[in-house]
Length: 158
Image (cartoon, rainbow, N blue to C red; front, side, top):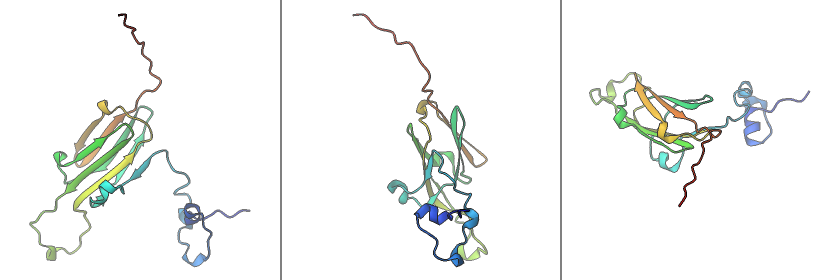
């Protein structure tokens, strides 16, 4: 029976040298294959911006839905740019200056600038895209271009 390669062996193409440091065997099923879209936050443009925004990308037959938690950010402080195959979300979450740094017992919340670039799995109709924010959840609906749709072209006579 052929032994399955570890997560790092599949990613790097290498082979396992020592079992002592292989804590990732249980993650073999986490990344069996790449989806048809890419979510990343490391472009040159977003490198200047601090954190990476966590997102969910849902691919339905008629639209692509992107959800992100943006609690503490006003909608007017979010910059969402879309093209037919990519979306970029940039914003900033400002920390309250009422509390001094020395008064914190434990601090985990992210404050500051964030961004996310998402390469979409299919082309979208930019003109029909919608975004809404409710209770800190940003939801962006991106209708897909119907490539099967046909229209009759009228021929003009001069």
